[in-house]
Length: 394
Ligand SMILES: Cc1ncc(COP(=O)(O)O)c(C=O)c1O
Image (cartoon, rainbow, N blue to C red):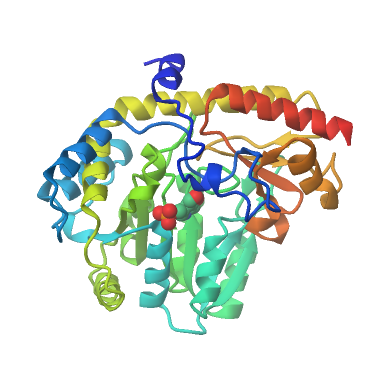
């Protein structure tokens, strides 16, 4: 399927569908519900037909009592991981969590104690810091560094903070939202070595693991260095970003460690998170089994959207667009062309766009914006032109 066919077949208007992105923006954008929504990370495309059929088939049963996960559901995930990520995941390593964020809370509560230090690398998806603070752990941040327009981890700072604060847990974002980096295996080996040396458990949020562009290669955390660190890793992932089914609340918590697994099971039981929603199980299974072609076309649309946004915005050399290695979230630096305090005015009031503001991801994100590219190409071009003109006009 080429990109035009994909957009024509799957592109959909989500206004007035109770979409958080389209119908729920007023709270985050000064009461405005009329902006072009390029914020929340989901897509303006219908999911693969096989997913719709699986949901319809289950709906037609008309019986929605407590339901086991289908036998074949974990198998579909295992096959997906093997085919797409060369990860040979065993069935007993997999646990159900509704969302990756709820999974993060489970992991923090199961594997650390109140007051323990947890490290994250900012700017990063803001529920990371919320999950640490809301569970009464100590939040430690190590800022990523911009090396000539590409973010890298600051390993010296990371290790020093681990030592100084006796850090117990590290939350890795891989690929990294919002800076769109796909970490190389070499980078992961270095950061995991530090964690191993200091006994720090690694939680890898890989919700964006299937959204990879160009020559970049996702190395899923459990297989880094041929599985050298697997016993100190918990991976969280889902079909939700990949196939636009986040509303169905179905995610995977994976660990090969028996010791960590037992602690996680106890916490899941305590939080009464044992059964998933049967619609979610069926949707995820159908997506993993039959979604390859859909995903390949979706990725091409995102790649083209990125190129067209970059082309438009690069007409102004003071707007810096970061490389999109992974995720469908484009990180843009406006610091050279808009004073920090004027960014909301330029983006929201002049351009009429709703984006994620950089400061939401940590103080070091101030002056940046994150634009969601998972929408139809005309909208991306419109947004690019609006932003370019708004910067010129101010
Ligand atoms: C890195 C990352 N983790 C988790 C989530 C949300 O996961 P969930 O909806 O499964 O809680 C997002 C959504 O944008 C994300 O970017």
